[in-house]
Every structure is written in structure tokens, then in C-alpha cells.
Length: 605
Image (cartoon, rainbow, N blue to C red; front, side, top):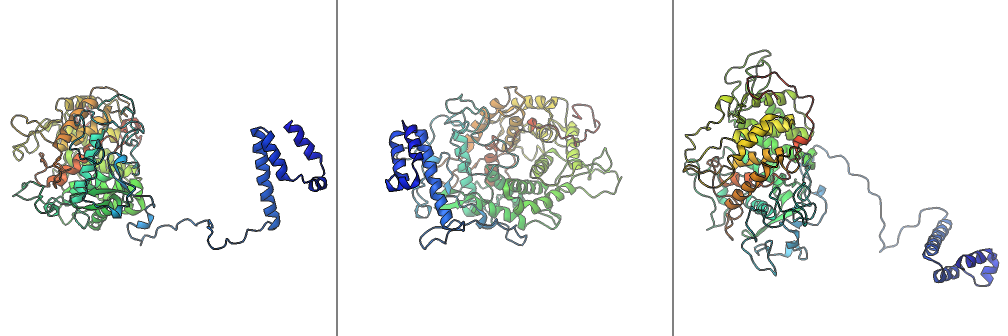
């Protein structure tokens, strides 16, 4: 009936339709009453087309006149011109105009309805698990044992949604396989609400103790504590902490923020209720810290220079700048990062076995050798600890698209094989020292963890060679399981070693973590459960104290740098789940040379 009526109306001449009052509007009204939905849709499109056609005909195809005052006109904007090298390192106008968001373990506890400038930043912000604004001292459940809600596939409470993933990070909170999404299994293999809260509280402690110029130092961190709320123990060398490692601890603190995806343009902010202060992570913390590093870079690319060499500083600063460059800040930090990489490669020691080849790193740079000149004892004096940090810096440089000579990669692998014994242990300076203490007399109050150098050796091999079939990896992983993280004393000595736990966590997460192609189902879950228990238990939770959120209990290596070091490295410990993509899932780089064995054992894989 509707189709018949439409055909009848179409046969009536236009003049007759006009004289008899059969306007287009009448036809549409009739169709709306009697036609199915398809006909209605067609009629609507016809009507819109007719209106547009009339408008085009009336204007002769020309652009419509300018809108009168009070109306909005949408104009096309030209793209921004390339950044001039003379521009400031960070331009706040480049930060996206997104609404700021308070960094909390659960976004539902933020208060977006109240403009930030109108809030009293000394008021308690609330904690996960609280209701009706009432204060709760701790989370429900046992910290470190899958307490809270594990972060699953997009359903968890991770607070880094606005952070920018790094160039090498394939796993973000809520994306890692096996974390147990909503309704999924509760296994201790990934981040939990407890670990995310600990990271956030660690951020606040680091923010509170950052110097006004952007750096961090153990030497004067007490100056940032409110009167009557001193948080740091009076220890260290001669009762004070050293400023020798300021570049290193500043870089570690920056890496803690960068490791969670917070670059210089992060719009997330932290609230320090003790100081009554709010700070944006990007411009107030990270950008200031990175500029502090760049301001101290020497013309040769180093950060200490003048003979005061301490290559931990150089490696950590290079790592921080490379990660900043990989987090979308390439045009800001790339030049300084490349200069740092170039210096670090020049500082690499010379191989005692292969004239002209590279080796590992030590506290001071290696001398420049003439072509073909044999290396003496000093020229080849290297250790696994400094080498580990240097390797991570160079790997991050590669992932950020910076130039890294292949000889530096080959040399690092050569030295690591040289230090590898046959039983899964790695020595500090050679295979003969595997299983021995490192400067044991100096650290008489602390137990030495034999697997520390082995975990660094695992990281070097995993990130540079990508060989999942390397037999050393399984042997070293077994060694680490025999010495799990624990705050309990060992033989009357303190067993706390955050440094050993950091590299152990990184190595085992890469080896058989939830994203690894190696599935032993024996190592990572066992280690991670122990690590979470120890690290979370040692964080300070004294409500209202300056120490809250920091790690005040020292470990074997904190004697010179204090809680800035211990807090930063433990935040990094709890970011292991999403900081790096799994390197064993990457095919080996065919440009990496396979040198002949340097000794009997597990080389030269």
C-alpha cells in the first residue's frame, strides 16, 4: 500500500501537486505514518539532500558567508613547525591539554569534581578499601601474597593509564598475560593493588625529597623533612651520606618514574599531604630531574669528569636519558643521550684476549689504546656490576633508536662469558671469583648473596643474545631460587640486599615470567611471591611521618647514599612487571658476533 501510494504521488505533475497542496512535506508525513523503517530512512536522506542542494544552488557553489558574532567557525589549523634547536628543552605548550589526574592505585579514589586549586592538600586522600572517607590504616589481606585485586586484562586498578609506554615496553599494567583478570586466577606472578600502592607511596616520598634544582642527593635529603619529622637514619660514612653518587641516585629516582611510563609530559600528579603540596609528575619532577642531568653533562658526554670517575653515575645517567628519549621525548633528550652513549662506549675496557676488541666496564674509563696495542691489567680491569648497568643503558639506547657500536655489544658478551663458571654462578671480575664475596670485610654486617652476579649475567645474555636455549640461564635461575628474597637475618648478618633482589627479579621475570616463551613454571612465581613479601614489608607505613612511603631500612649498598637509593631501587623492583618487554621473545640479532670460547665452561653461547 505504501509503495503504491508513493508511485501515485510520483506520477502527478509538479504543477498539479503544487495546486492541490501536495507538498514534499505532505509526502514525508504520509510516509512516516504508513511506511516501514527502510522507507523512512530513505525519505530522510532524500530530504537532507534536497536541502543541501537548494543551499548550494542559492550560493552559486560559493563558500557560505562568515558566521555572525556569537557563532563558532571551525577552521583548519596548520601543523606545528619543527622544533628549533634553540628552543627550551621542555616546552609546556607541547603538553596535551588533558585533564590532570591524581595518581592513586585506584582511579575511583580521585576527586575530579573539586578543582585541584581549591583543594586542601594536607587532607588525607583516602586509601583503597576505604569507604565514606574514613581512614583505613592498611589494605585488607596479607601484603605481598596476592592481596587486593590483581591487575588483569584491562580490568585492574592500575593507575598508569595516561602514562606513555616506552619504546621497549610491551607490557603495561592490565596487559601482561597471566595476571588473572576479573574473575581469573589469583596467582602471584604480576602486580597487585598492594604493589601499585607501594609504588605510588614511593613516588610521593621521592617527590618530597627532591631538591629544588631537580636533583636528588643522600647528602642533604634530610633538609626536605618537615621540622620534627626527620625520616632518615644517621648512618653512612662518618655519619653522613656522600654526594659522590648524586648523578647516580638522581638517575635512579628518575628511572623509577620513567619505568612507570611517566615522561616529562606526564599530566598525572601526586599529592603530599604531609607537606600540603601537589606536583605534576611531568613538569614538576621528571622534567626538572632530566634538565638537572643535562646541565651537568660535560663536553665529552660524561657527567662527572675531571678525573672524579665513578662509572655507575655515567651508566645510570645514560640509562635515564635513553629511557626518556624512548618515552616520546626524543627531540628533547636524544642529543644528550647520544653523547652519553658515545662516552660510555669510549669508557669500555679493552679485551685482554683479543687486541682491539672491547671488554667490560669498571669504576674508571679504560685508556685509549693504539691499534693493535695489547691491553695491560688496568686497561682490561672490569667488573660485572658496572658492566650490568652499562649493558642496560646500551640496550635502552638501541631501543630508543640511538647509535650503539656493535663492538660494544660483542665486548660485553665476551666479558660476561669470561666471568661465567660451569655451575650457574658468575664471578665479580672473572670465573674464578664466582661464589666469592665482594669486598666482604667492608660489609661485615651483611650477608653476600652468591647469585647477585649470576642474575646480572642472565640479564646481559638475555637482553643481548636473546638465546632461550642457553643452558646457563636455567642453571643460574636454579641458583637464585636457592636464595629467595627475605628480610630475615642470615647467619647473624642482615640478609637485606635490594640490589640483588632488583637484578634477580629482572632476570627471572625475563627468563620464565608470564610473557616469556620459556615456561618452567618453577622460578618466577616462587621468586616473585618472596620478593613482594620482603619489599612490601620493608616499606615504611608510619602514617603522618616523613618516612612514610620510603624504604628506611638500609641494605648492603646503601651506606653511601641512604634512603634515596633504597626507595628508588625498590620502586623499580615493583615495576619489573611492565618495564621491559620480554627479550627472549625477540629473535637474536644476527649482527651479534659469536666469538670463539675464551675458556672452558658455558661460553661462548
